[in-house]
Length: 79
Image (tube, rainbow, N blue to C red; front, side):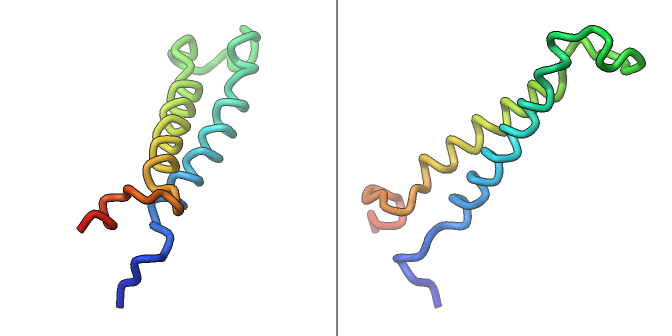
């Protein structure tokens, strides 16, 4: 039922996290340079979108690198 040559689902999840993280970071960048971007947002100075986007981007990169399909030293192949 389980094949060893398949691509791990975590690779695709990491890819999605990279894409979504990039979108959120890019969308949050104008708020850094413009004080009038969101005047009624509480604690807008913390730039939550930028932090969460960066976290998603880093986590996605970690998953993509860790579960790259052609990687020979994957834990599943060491058994």
